[in-house]
Length: 236
Image (cartoon, rainbow, N blue to C red; front, top):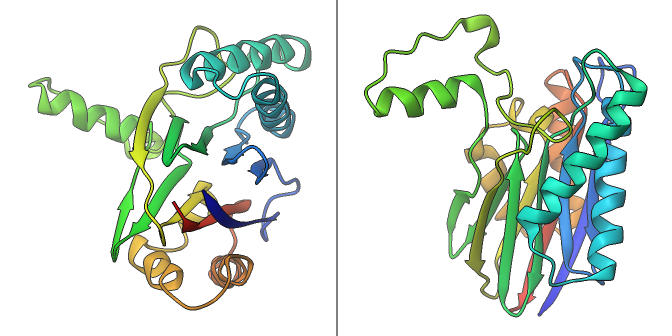
């Protein structure tokens, strides 16, 4: 499999610290993003430990089960959280994938996102783990659930909090000319899916496309950290 990739992160215009981290490792076929939870101290440390631990463990075993890996990393972040912030711990989102043997294995916890532009269709591959989406799921099962507008975007799953996180795992067939986009919510909240799709369908190289996306998010306020990774599949 041959691909080209790029990653870009920006602190934005409001935050005092960039708590986002990314994975962009061509040698391992490993790409993704982690968004440290800003409501807790140590978000940057949580995201940093997460990406470092993932790289280290995949270097040791590229065939490692991604669900087990994600849950193991969450345990390590939980231990660090007991040191940095004993009352509440620390946390981060995590959305990442490994490309190998013509497939993408994708693991996801939180509200960062992965998309693919494939044969003209722009598809979101992940679902945000938020109070609003959880309520929607329960309503579909017949439960009467009310959501307070003030916490509808609060996370229902993350890396580093007590317990073993439920990990969304999916596997996809990769085709030539696919474009895979991993992003934190600082970008998703500033640009619509339609706008991102239009940019990714353009003629620019991955790094140039990411700059266009981040610059547009900054122009619209840059209210959060902004991080994205883009992978072009040249040959599946």
